[in-house]
Length: 81
Image 1 (cartoon, helix red, strand yellow):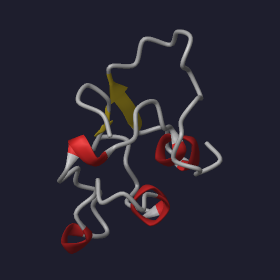
Image 2: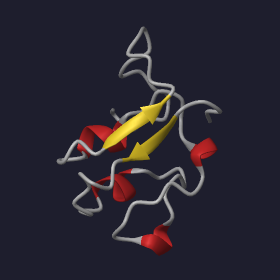
Image 3: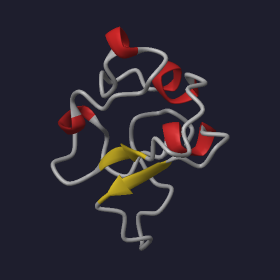
């Protein structure tokens, strides 16, 4: 789990397709808010996981803590990100 890594949704781009909320099995998103993706538990996000962002067809997901550096695309949650 991460203290300084979590998704941020750009609601001006989001098309509410559900790809991010369906992908994440760590409880980051609030299932009660579907189809709108709401980050309810940012600390549940796995450090440097980009699984939800990689699936977003609108490019509406960025990450707090994203430095684009050595860990880009590397996570340990097994999501094949």
